Image (cartoon, rainbow, N blue to C red; front, side, top):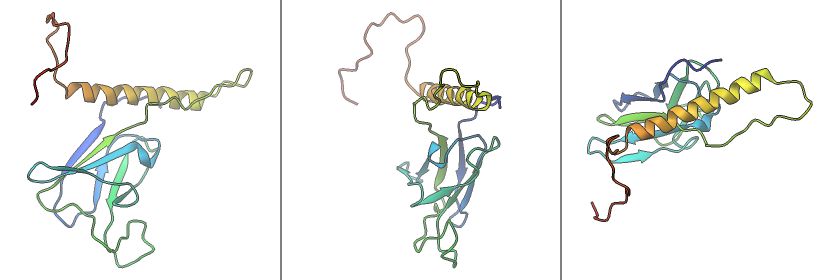
Length: 157
């Protein structure tokens, strides 16, 4: 599959009862997401996979959902928890693709060329590049014509 989109994150407002939040981009594994809940006052809390939420549709090109845990009344539900983990009204849920920066494909000499795993490796590299670009886009930058030779700040915030 070719990566034709550049979406690496999604954001939605919470209402205290909603437990399902969609993400519209491919991930390879459930752990390829970082889920952050931002309060109305601006504090951010990184949520924990399988403790606070579960992920659906890893591997699907169209994405899936983050399901926050709560007391569904059925302890066999994958997103059941005795305590309510759903984001509250006034909070914002941010779902970011966050791949580990590793190379997972190993080509063995004299084996048939693995087209599917090679395509996945290229997709992964494209996703990592997009992830890094999203971080760069949020950073403080010097103008292209700036001749400053050190970007070290010597004065505290």
